[in-house]
Image 1 (cartoon, rainbow, N blue to C red):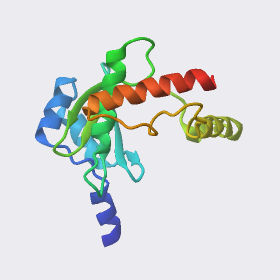
Image 2 (image 1 turned 90 degrees about the vertical axis):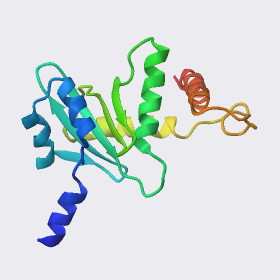
Image 3 (image 1 turned 180 degrees about the vertical axis):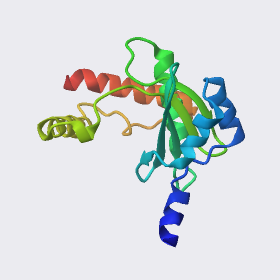
Image 4 (image 1 turned 90 degrees about the horizontal axis):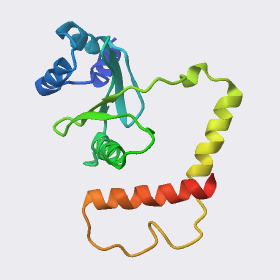
Length: 172
C-alpha cells in the first residue's frame, strides 16, 4: 500500500500557482485544474502527460522527468515554437506556455488515433517509418559530422530543422 501511494505521488503533475493561473486564462475552472491531481496521467520515463479539455480548448500538459539537468519540456517547447515561427503547413501542436521552474509545457492537443486502437499492421507500418527516419544514410558530411562554430540554441535548432527538412525530402 505504501509503495502504491509513493508511485501516485511521483506521478502527480505538480502544477505551480503560475501554471494554474495560465490554465485559468485558457478558461479552465479550479475544479478542472484540481481534477488533474486525481490521476489521468500518462507518459513514460521522460515525462508525465495529462490531458485537459473544455468547450474552448483541448490541451496537453507535460512535466519533464529528468535525472540530469537537461530539460525535455524546455527543448520540446523551443522546437515547437521554432516550427510555428517557420509557418507553412501545420505539422505540430502549438506551444502555449512553458514554466522552467518545474519543466511544465502546455500545448495544443492534436486529435489522432490512439495506438491502443490501431491494428497491428498499422503499428508495424508506423514503426517501420520511424525506424527509417531514425536511421538516416548520410550522402554528405552533415550534422553532427562537421565542425560547428559557437552559436545560440536557436541557431542550433534552425540547423537541425533544415537538416531534417532536407532529409525528409530525400526519403520521401
